[in-house]
Image 1: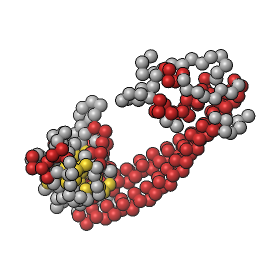
Image 2: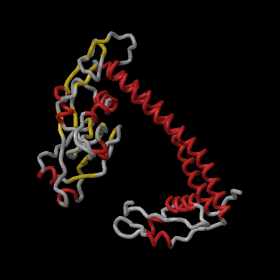
Image 3: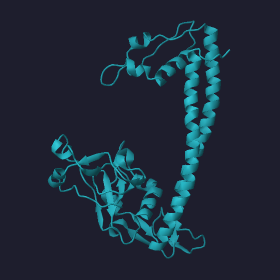
Length: 323
C-alpha cells in the first residue's frame, strides 16, 4: 500500500462502517486539516489515533451505520437522477448550438457537402472559410518575466489568462501588468474589446470568451479579432459547439495542447451576416431557457448535499435517534 495512506484495523467491539462515517464526518468538518502539519498539511498515524470520537455500544454502532446507509442511499439516488438530468440538459444545449451553427434555422433549406468529413452538410447558400483568412487579427501573448515587480506591481493593463475564460462575456480578469511590461515584451499586444478568445493549453483547452475589455493575453490564449465575414458571437458559438473537435486536434499527454496554426487552419461554415445575427439571437434564447432549468435543478441539489452531510454528522454524534 502507498505510504500516502494510513490503514486502521478496528477491534472486535468496533463496527467498521460506523467508524467510516465518524471519520467522514471529521473530514467534512475539516478537522483533519486542522491537525495536519507541514506545507502539504500531512496527517500522521498518531494524529488519527489521538482523535477522540463517540463510541456507543456495538449494536448501536451497527444500527447507526445501517440507518445512515439507508438514508444516504435514498438521497444519493435522488441527487444522481438530478445530476444526470443536468448532464442531459447540457448535452441538449450543445446540440442546439451545433445544429444552429451548422444547418441554420430553416428546416427546409437545401444542403450541400461542406467538404469537411466531421462537419457534413451545410446550407447551400453558406460558404466555408479558413479561420486564417477570416480575421484581420489573430495572435497570442506571453508571460512577462516572472518575479519582476517592474512588470506586475501596480499594473493597470488587463492581462488575460486561460483561467479567466468563462464561455461567455469577459468583463474583468484576475491579473494586470504594467506599461513597462508591454514595452519590454514585443509579443504583448493590446487587443480591442469584442475579441474572441480561445484557450489552447491544458485543462482549459477549448474554453472560449468574448472579451469586453482592452487587454493583452498570455501565451496559452489565441485571439481572433476584426472579421468582415463573422459576427464574433457566431464564431464564439461555433467554437463552443465544436469544442470536442478542437480538443481532438490536440497533442501532448496529460496536458493536451493546440497551436495557433491549428486554430488558423480550421474551416468554419459562414452564413450571411444577417443570418448569423438571427442564429445568434435564437441560440441566446434557447440557452436562457435551458440554463434556467439547469439552475433550478442545481438549486435543488445543493440543499440535498448539505442535508446528507448534516444527517451523517447528527447520527454519529447522537443528535438524532436512529433506533
